[in-house]
Each structure stands twice: as structure tokens, then as C-alpha cells.
Amino acid sequence: MTPQMSADVPGADGPAPSSSGFFDLDRPPLSAPALRRALLREGGLWSELDVVASTGSTNTDLVHRVRQGEVEEGTVLIAEEQTSGRGRLDRHWNAPPRSGLFCSFVLRPGPEVPQRRWSWLPLLTGVATATALARTAGVDTMLKWPNDLLAEVGGQERKIGGILAERTGNAAHDAVVIGIGVNVSLRADELPVPEAGSLALAGARGTDRDPLLRAVLRAVEQWYAQWRAVGGDPAACQLQETYAAGCATLGRTVRAELPGGQDLVGEAVAVDGEGQLVLATGSGVQESVGAGDIVHLRPGT
Image 1 (tube, rainbow, N blue to C red):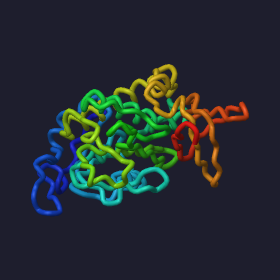
Image 2: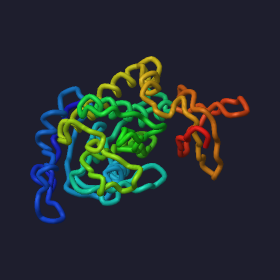
Image 3: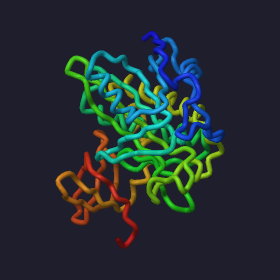
């Protein structure tokens, strides 16, 4: 695949204007040309990269582009600000301009990967993001099944980011759009909810988003290549093992809030070959959860 240089867009190659008209020196803008030079290469995954000053949601934008016509695999859209960022269950993800990583990209695993294994893509992205942040920012980043990123802030486990995967396209050109949102430099008074956190509040050794974003996208590229090379088998490429090792949900008592309003309480004992969370219930039965909201319960609750 030959990298294609995307057309420049407002805010992509220079400083993105803030709402006040001034620049926050602690939150410098991203440089699209620098990111392209670092990430777009012959034979690599990333094929096109844009940085926009502001948008509603990078996932929404890319899903729309995929539905309107052919979008090459490896297309990346990064926003300095999202005004209608989305998470799972249509939750909103908002943060001040240039305070986090807000990006989405298009993957097309193709027929060589059985579609039942495509459910591993958000988990793969979580592993790649967590390991990249730990290595680059020096923050021990854990995973909450299925797609939350956690870090310790003030002795408490806080959510610092999340992954959103949306399948779109058509039968001939099926695609998955994956979005990553990470709070990087948010201060305590900027957090959307008290339970949230950021890399800065977790003691990151740096909050420059450029090296963080490069590390994340390179890690995604590496894991995706390994996963795809073995037909998406999560055990063969050690993805399943690596996810389990970094998953804060395993070994804990959790409540799974399932679609339809049902709850299931049990100990999270494994992530199976389909990426589902396996719970051991009080009745001694193991049940797999493929979708739902997971609440980590304290002992005795």
C-alpha cells in the first residue's frame, strides 16, 4: 500500500485556534506534516492522516466517509477538539482543546480474518494504547473490559480513556472505524466527572501529545499486523494472553449490566477466544458476556 498525502485542511498544519484566541503553551498544537513524516511509510498500515482543529466526533466523520465511498485502510483522522465525542452506549466524551488524544482510523481486515474474530479489534487497540502510554508516559495503564483505559490517581482507579469500534461499509468493502480518546493534560477542575482521570494527574513524565500519539499508532500497527498474519487468532499472536495480563477486570467480582436491563454478578475469570468476558457466578456456572457495562465491585458489595 502506497501512503497517500492527504490534502491540507484548516488547522491541520499550523496552530489550532483556541476559543479564547490565545494559545495554551502547556498544550501545543499537533503538526500534521510531522506526524505524516513519522507514520506514513511504504508498506505500512497508515495511508492518510489529517489533523483538524475541531469536529463533533472523529468516529462519526470517518463512518460517514466510509459510507459515502471508498476509504483506504489506514486512514487516520485526529482532532484537536471534539465537541460531540462519543463513547460506548452513546456516552459523550468532551474535553478542552488540545488536552487529549482524539483520533479515529479505518481498518479492513478482509476475508483472511474470519469476521467472528473482528470483535478483537477494540481489545487489540486497547492493548496497543495501554502499552504505548505506559512506555511513553511512564504511567501504569490497565484495561477494564471491554474498552476502558485505567490509571491510578491519588490511590484510586480512574478512567483516563476509552476505545470505540463501529462496523460500517458494505458487504464488498466492510470496515471497522476505531476511535481512541485519552485524557492527557486535564487538570482536576477540568474533569467531566469526579471518577475520571488523566495522564497528568496520574503522574505522567510528560504530556506532549506528539510522541504519545506516534507511540499509540505504531503499537496499533504492530499488533494489527501480528493479529492479521495469523488469521485473527488471538492466542497465536499472544494478544489474548497480553490482554489478560493487563486487564484489571480479571480476578474481581463484577456486575455486568446487560442489554435489556438484566444484571449478572460473578467473578471475572477469563477473556475467551471471542473476546467475551467469562464470569463464574455464585451458582457455579460460567457465563460469557459479549456486551454490556461492567462495574467493578468492592468486596462485600
